[in-house]
Every structure is written in C-alpha cells, then in structure tokens.
Amino acid sequence: MTTRILATLVFLAVLAAAPAFVPPFEVRVLSLFCFWGALSLAWNILGGFAGYWSFGHTVFVGIGAFVPGVIVAKLFDGGGAELMPLLVLVGGLVSAAFAGIIAWPLLRLRGIYFAIAMLGVAQVTGELSAAIEWIGGGVGLSLPDAVPAALAPEAFFHYIFVGLLALTIGAAAWVRGARFGQGLLAIREDEDTARMLAVPTEGYKIAALVLSAFLTGLLGATYGFSLGYITTDSVFRTDFSLNMIVHALLGGIGTIAGPLLGAAVMVVLTQVVLGEMLNLHLFATGALVVAMVLLAPQGFLGLWRRKPRAQREPGP
Amino acid sequence: MTAPVLEIRGLTKRFRGLVALDHVDFTVPEGTICGLIGPNGAGKSTMFNLVTGFLPPSEGEIRFRGTPVTGWSPQQAGRSGVARAFQIARPFPGLTVRQNVRIGALFGRSGPRDVEAATDTALALLGIEDLADRPAEGLTVGHLRRLEVARALAARPVLLLADEPCAGLNPAETDAMIAALRRIRDGGVTIWLVEHDMRAVMGLCDRILVISAGRAIAEGTPGEVAANPAVIAAYLGSEEQEAHGA
Image 1: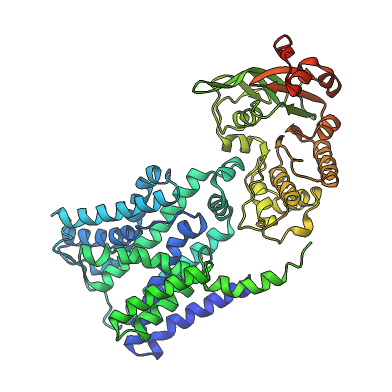
Image 2: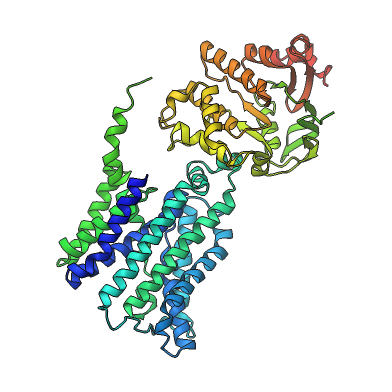
C-alpha cells in the first residue's frame, strides 16, 4: 500500500518536473495526458466503481468551463484573471450542484437507460448554452489570461493539470478504500442485494455522481482557461464523453491505474504516433477499441492480471 | 419480558387479482429457529419479501422487536438487524469471497465497527475461510450457499431469514449447513427459514408455520405439524385441506 502511494507520488513529481526538461510540444502532450487521465478517472468513480455509465459527462466539462466564462463576461468585463483559482473552484461547484439536481430523477434509471439519459442531458445543456443569448455559447466567451509573466503558458497549465490529476487520483483512491467505495462496488455488482445489505444505495449513487461532476467541472474550467476562448462546440463535445469511457475501458474499468493507462496509450497514439495522419488516427482508434472489447474486456490491466489468477486456482 | 423478534398479524399481499398471502399470523420468538414451509407457490418468498421490505404489504402489520415496521425499506430492515440469504444465491460475482462477506459486515446493524473480525468469524463459521481470496464467480453451489449465509451473518443480524439454505446441497453439505445454522442460533441470532429439505426442517426448527395458497394451514412444533392432516393434505393434494383451514 505504502509502496503504491510512494510510486504514485514519484510519478506525479516526475510529471510535474517535465517543463524544466522537455520542449513545449512534449509538455503539451503530457498536459493532455493529465487532463484525459483525470477526466477518465473522475468518470470512473461513477462508471467504474458504481457501474453507472454516463454517456454525457462532457456536460460537466461544459458547465465547468462556461461558469467562469459567464462570470467573467458579466461581472468583470473580461478581466478577473487573478481570480482564476476561485473561478475554477466555482466551475467545479456549479457542475457538482447541477449533478445533484439531475441525480435524483436520473439515477432511478438503470443500465443503458441512465447512459442514454445522460447523453440527452449533455445534448440539451449544450444546445441551451448556445441558444440562450445571455450565456453566449454560440458566439463564444473569452477567459482572461491568467499566466504569470515568469511562466510559459504550457508550463503554467501543465502544473495545474498535474495538480488536478493528483487530486483526482487521491479522491478515487480514497473512495476505493472507504466504506463508500465498497458500497459502490456492491451497487455495481447487484443493486438489489446491496439494498438488502443496508447499503444506502440512493445516497451513494448521488454522492458518486456529484463527486465525479465536481472533479470533471474543475478540469473543464481549467481546460476553458487554457483555451482562452470557449464556445459550445469546444467544450460540450460528445467525443469528450466517449473518450472518458474509451480510456477507462482500454486500461481497465473500475481500477485506478486503468483509466490513466488507457489515457496514456491513446494520447501517445493520437498525438505522437499518428499526429500527422488525422484520417488514419480515427480509423486506428476505432480498430483498437474494437480489438480491446473483443480480446480483452478487462482492459490492459486485465490482460496482465489474468495469468496469475489462473495459476492460483488449482481446484479445491 | 422482551418482545418477540418478529410478529406478523393479518399479513396480506395481493398482486392485482391474485392473493399471494391471506391474513397470516405468526410469531418468531427470540433465540429460536422457526420454519416456513408449504408447497411451491404457497407464498413463502412473498412472506420474506414483505418482512425485508422488498414489497409493501396490502394489509396487516409487521412488528420487529416490538416496534411496528410495516412497509419499511430493505435498507431500514438491514440496518435494524434483519439479514436475508436468498433462495438463488446472489453473490457479487466480480468480488472475492472475502470482499463479499466484508460488505455484509460494513453495512449491517453494527455499522463499520469490527469489520475484519466479523468477516473472519462469518467465514470461519461457514467453513469457507480457505476460499476467501477466490472470486465469487465460479464457486460451486454448495460454496455459494455458504457464502450467501456468511455474508448475511457478517452483518451481525438479530434475525436471519434463510431462503432454502440447503437447496441443491448433497447430504454431507446439508449436514454442514444444519450444523452451521445451529451455531449461528447458539451465537444469539434468531433464524426463520424456508426449506424443502424435511430432514433439515424437522431437525432444526422449534416452531413451524405451514402455508398453502397464501393461507396459514398449520402451526406448531415439528411433531405437531408433521401429524397435522391439513399439512399432509396440502402436500399430497387431498380435498380434506378445506376442512382444516387454520
């Protein structure tokens, strides 16, 4: 256990030190990994631990990014750069509050119905952000440049994304080890039996969605600041929702290392190996996902773990 | 004296036109093992579903340790100390045996206190400590049944509802289950069980309720019930059962 914590801290420290050693492009790739890994891990708290797959988690990225955008436009007239930490926090909190509101009706749905309902929520919320002129998602919103003079922009955002990744890993690890996490696993495995064992299923599902939305909202808000200018199309993105699922699936759903591993593989594949061949990369991504679902439904981690488990079972 | 662990008065459940349970009365005294028997479709599982809050009764009252609890939720039942082992074992397949039992201990009546000790005790009492690190998926029927009871027991219940704990077990496994249920009772847990294995029922139970087509047709000690003509009629399908309705 302690070795695992130590390894995670070393890993995060190495990631954080990257801007001092590697060129800007590679720093951006690493930031992208932190962003994707953290998003997928946040999704995994509800989707992997509790088994409630959301197909519309981009709604929390969108809300997380739009809340600071709207506040800055309405209250600070485009300024307010020094308030960035607070604005990011508010983005996360509003995402969490929104999750709390939709949780009650939506989490009564199970399986694919919940997944589709979340997809609908994301679509509708995205449409509204564009259609309501007061919000201004159609035209777009500017976020102030909060980068300190002493830092390069990619390094500044890299530090924040590493910090958010650390926060998300910490949150997921805490959930996993806590009674709360055991309750979520029970819900995933058999919700009726979980109820009979006195797992407070309704409260736990809501808490998992709210926590997941809070983390996703923080990431969305930071992403918005890193873009500097957001529109509905740049943050309410169906491919965001799908990637969170794909990364978790690839690496190993319901684990902590899995979503990070999946995100690492996909970021390397799309940004480094196939970065020059945009058409081919979508094709290759699709082929990889199909292959994984067919050959290794437990993800990369499942492939790695399968052998020792088989050896441990020489009959009773 | 202390109130009985469970009291059922006039309990009735209708599913649209069908009357699954019809004004049934029964009392489960503390520290006993009681039985609930009857032909298939008599309403035994419905009875357990009402007591554990999975279904609301249409009429009647349920009292748990003297407190009216009619219409409570499964969570309230679980927290108050009612545990249930399902007829068809429902382990969490993706978790190990120990993880399964531990969840029972984490959320039961005693809450998250002494979780590891309760888990170990339950595993040992059912004799499955050697399987603790195996995935629940792929266990034999006999092991699944024991896991089902161990998980319920880990919650440290006041009342254990065991729905056919011996179904599908071979004679040796049945004996082991009977011995385990006795030890559980001796440990202070009151048990109400549904069972088709007459050897188990007659050997274990202090009192037995017999239901048929939703009605209570007999109640008493195993000896009384076995000699009751209405019970024999219900099991053999004679016309006499009308005359002896309880």
